[in-house]
Amino acid sequence: MKEEIFVYIIGTAGSGKSTLTHIFKQWVELRGVDAITVNLDPGAENLPYKPDVDIRDWISLKEVMDTYKLGPNGAQIACADMLALNIDDMKKSIEAFKTDYVLVDTPGQLELFVFREAGKYIVEFLNPQRSLIAYLLDPALAKNASGFVSQLLLAISTNFRLNRPQVSVLSKADMLTKEETEVVTQWSQDAEQLHDAILTEQASIYREMSEGILRLIQDFQEQTTLIPTGKEDFLGIEDLYTFIQLQFEGGEDLMRD
Image (cartoon, rainbow, N blue to C red; front, side):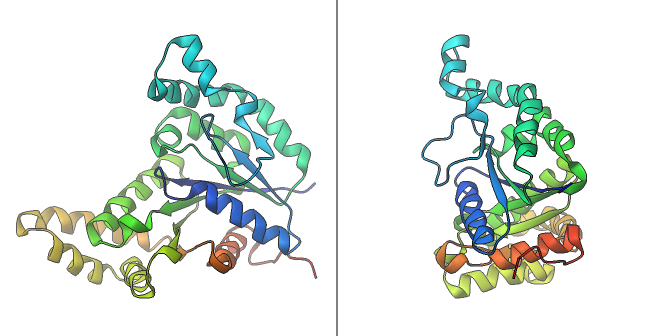
C-alpha cells in the first residue's frame, strides 16, 4: 500500500502558504508524481488551486459566525478547535486518493494551527512518522536581521510544538533582489554574520538578550536548512522536493522516466 508524505505548509498571514501549495503541486505533477492538496482554512477565499480535500466541506466560517454570534476572529478560533472533530472524515478522504504527497495548506493565522491543540492532534492523527513541516519566512520581514530573527523564533516554536522534521522556506524569494536573497541565505548559514547584523540594528542595551536568542537560533539552524522559493520558473521547488525525499526515502526519487 502506498504511504503518502504529508507536508504541512505553515507560516504567518501573507507569507505565501497557498501559493507554495499551488506551485509545489504543479511542479511534482509535471514530473509524474502524484500529489493532492488539503485546505485547512475554513475562511479561505480565492485560493490559487482547487483543493482535493477541503475543510470548508465540513466547516463554514460564516455559519459558525451566524450560529454562535461571533466576530471573524472568534469564529476563526472556534473553527480551529472544530478541525479535530472532522479529522476522521478528512483522513478517509485523503487515503482514498492513494497519493505520493499530501500538501496541507494550514490556516492563514499561524497561531490557529500551531498553538491550538487541534493542530498538534491533526498531525499526530494523520501520519506523524511521514510528516514534515515547511515553515515559510516572509521575505518582506526576512530581509532585515531583526525581522529574520523574529520569524526564526516562530519557526522554533512551531518545531517545539509539532515535533516533526522541519525545513525553513524563504517564500516569494523572487520578490527580493539577488543580493538580498544572498544576505538572508548567509544569515541562515552563519550565526556570526547574523549576530553582527543584529548588533548593527539593535542598541547596545539589547546586546545580552540578542546574544542569548542567537545561541538558540544557532542550535536550531544546525538542524534545518533554508530554501528560497518563488513562482518564477518554480524557483527552489526542486530543492524542496529533494530535501523531503532525503528525509523519508533516503533520496530515492519518485519521478518517473
